[in-house]
Every structure is written in C-alpha cells, then in structure tokens.
Amino acid sequence: MITPARSQGLSFNLHTSFSPLIPLYHTFLLDQFGVLHNGSQGLHGAVESINRLLHPSSGEPPKKLAVLSNTSSPSSVALERLKKYGLNEEMFVGGLVSSGEECSKFVRENYCSKKALWFTWEESETQNPLQFLSHCETENRLIEVANSVADADFILLHGSQVWRRCRESISKQDKEMAQDLNFLYDGDFSILDPILNEAANKNKPMVCANPDLIVGLPGGLVGNMPGKIAARYQEMGGKVHHFGKPNPRHFLACLSNIGISHNSDSQTIPGVAHVGDSLEHDVAGANAAGIDSVFVVGGIHAKDLGLLPTSSETDSGIKIVDDDECQERGGTTVISKSELTRRLQLLFKEKSIWPTHVIPSLSL
Picture 1 (cartoon, rainbow, N blue to C red):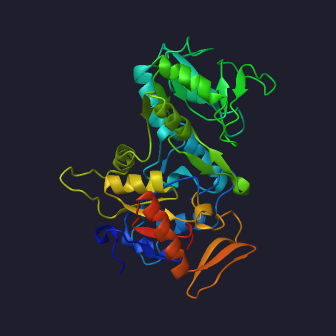
Picture 2 (cartoon, one colour):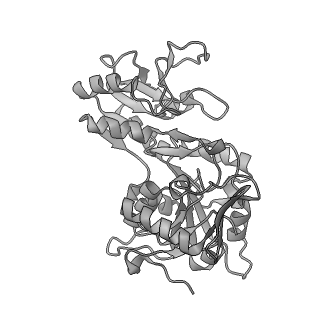
Picture 3 (cartoon, rainbow, N blue to C red):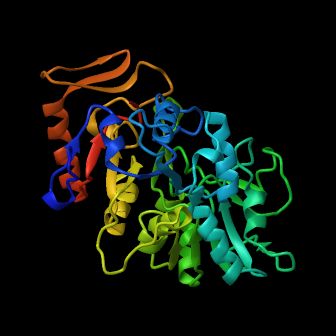
C-alpha cells in the first residue's frame, strides 16, 4: 500500500499511471483543463479512468466524483459542455463547482443595478458572455455595461479576450463594441495597462471570475487568463475579489456537494484527493484545504519540465521508464523515472509547492 506523502515533508510519490491511486481514496475532485480535456478535445485515457472509478474492478464501491474548475462559466453551463468529451453529469455525484458560479453569486449579492467595465470572451460556440452576465443578475436588478472607466462602478473580469461595451449580441466586425485586448494569445498589456491604471486611481473594485494565470490550448498553445490581469491590477494597487482555486473554500464547497463536511479541528480530510495540472491553483489549493493532491505533469507545466503535453491521441504525452532514456517519439516523451524526479524536484522547489502524488496523465 502506498502511503500519502503529506507527512513526509518535501517529497512526493511518482507513478507511471493513475491506476495505483484508485484504491487509496473514496473521493476524487477533478480539474477540467489539462486533466479531462484541453478545451477542444477530451484527453487520452480520461473517460476510461472515470469509468474505472465508477466501476472499480476489485469490487469496491464506486468512487465519489466531482469536477472542481476555475472556469468563469456558471456550473450548469460548464457541466453541459462536458458531454462533448464523452462525459455526463450522472458521473459526478458532486456535480461541477466553478469559480464562475461563485463569482456570479457574489455579483448578484453586491453589484446588481451597478455599471460594470466588462472584460470577457468573444462570442462563440463555446462562449456565451451574455449568459454569464444574466447569471449575475436577478429578475428585477440588472447590470449595466459601462462604456468607460469613469462610467463604471466596478470591473467584471469574466474573460481575457475583449473589452465589451454593450449587452446586445454583436458581430466580430463591430470592434468598437468588443475591442480585442490583444492579450489572450500575446500576453500584451499595452491596451490593458492604461485602462487598469485609470481604474486603480479611481478605486474601482475588480471581480475576477477565473483566477488562472495561463491555460494549455489545443496545438500546444498557451492562453493568458484573467488571473494574470487581476494580478497586474493588484500590483497597481487595485482591489480584487478572487474566486476559485487555490482558495480552500472552493474545495470545501465541492466536498459539501458530495456530503463530506470538514472538521475544523482537523488539518486534513482523509480519503479525498484532488487531481489537477496547476501547481499554483490545484496543488497549492488542495494542500491548503487539507486534501491530498495529484499533480498531472502532462498539463500546463509540461513545457516547464521539457515534456510534451497530453493530447487526445492514443500515443501522446509522457511515458515513464526505468532506464536513463529521455527522448521524443512522435507525440510522446519517453523519460526515465530518475530524470523526471530530478526535474520535478527542481520545479517544486522553485514554486515551493509539493504535491502528494505525481502522474503523467489521467490514464490507466
């Protein structure tokens, strides 16, 4: 039996697959991006692993599952999207808890009937900014969309792609109503900085629906996320309300959906593990909540480790071997346990964040 590494200090358990972890826990909280899918396609092995958790081969009872995500979408919307990746809501007894859900509740309670300077996403098949805005409102108390910093009561940081100046549906050609921030793919603050500086000088509070800094996108691209804008605003002296991971409340809310309560006298919650690919959000948040953490190396930190990220392809991601080999074969990085351990130790030491377990991907 493998024992969790939490009590061992700066150490972790490295596994060649997800399989050895299944008997260790009765409940798994799962991140979305980098674990279940990449925003476009389901990741190799994820659906098979979910099915194994729900139907353990050893005759054990089904594991309790929930999705814990920093997506800025409301929980019901994000849960519905999982169907395109071969997943459905019946698989997750704890449902899906999103930072967007917590954020929209906060806005409803504090900023209805106010004017928002609205940073969001372009309208697309997967993004519906107006749906999120409606979720922030009540039947009789709506949010007005401000045209300028001076006109706004607060900043609603829903996405990192456009500055939207109206509620009505708009075409991609109408750039005045949805100005591209030139930030999602380029990380360029030249458009954002003057806006944020003015807002900070005018003491406009910011509400951030997604605290992630970066996200892995299809094709190995990296997207710059709202959390990076929020961090910039704080550096300028702006006040930011954050929601989602790594806040322990996000984890405890997810456990509450499953029916697991946290004893305030205990520093740990036994039998529960969170699986995620972000050290700063998934691992740090789970550690703070007293939950064992499972770090997926084929996600957002793959490039930091000199590895190829996991994709939807059968032959993709990371394969761990016993010898000293380290090479790329097609879409796979073949790496020895000793070399990967060395790289992981350097990364964890740099971040001062140490997980309980490490796996290549959510695959058996």
